[in-house]
Length: 182
Image (cartoon, rainbow, N blue to C red):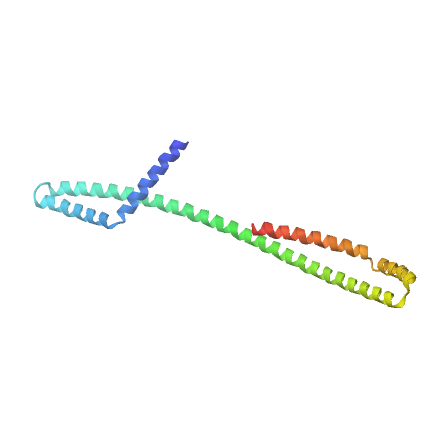
């Protein structure tokens, strides 16, 4: 299998080299000299004109056949490369769309977290105001009892749980952002 592949690669390199050479200035010069020589031989009576035309026609026909094959091989190879590039572009486009969707979801989550944090901050400010009022209005014994009631009413423990949950979500979002960056 590997030997066949290596042989194919060598033949492709040779075909590419010949195709390149045929399209070069040195090739133009060699072909021009060949044709001039071919037509000079009958004029110098070295070869008969009919034999020269027969040989020249045969050589040119064979050359045209092989050149057509080599050129088609190059076209096929180029077509394969173009298809590979198109597939890569399609995959990259899909990946970009996925990343954009993930970023939109993360942005929405961050907005929700920001709103939750604002609500928690408002609750904390209300609790602080209630505590200040208690400090001003009550003596020490009533103060402790009233402070406990205010704390219970404000669901401080649930606020702490919400803060902890929000921190976990933020940590999770940060991990997702780091993965997207990779």
